[in-house]
Length: 116
Image 1 (cartoon, rainbow, N blue to C red):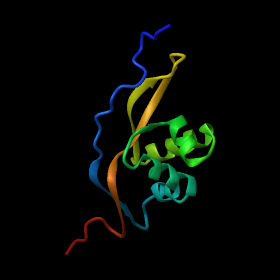
Image 2 (image 1 turned 135 degrees about the vertical axis):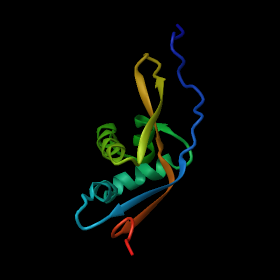
Image 3 (image 1 turned 90 degrees about the vertical axis):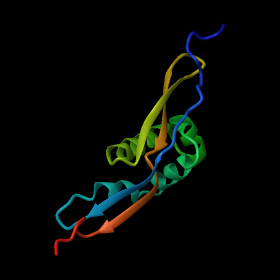
């Protein structure tokens, strides 16, 4: 039996070239907290090059789907990954496809703009 939904469409996606993250004394460092996990770093590495579903990421980084969901949520909240498409499993379940928001992340400590 064939599905009414396309299983995997070709993903036309290009992350922007660079994302800047400024950490100052009075700002929250949620993004750095999200990045401090080895699992989160592995997830970002797995997404480098090609977008992937949660289950594909879990296989690639050798962890549970629940753990990947947790880290993807934190990375998404901080603007480091984003959902870019929806694929369907053989059983017709929706699977979100995630990609990096930028190819490079630049972290700057201090004020974003210094007044003179």
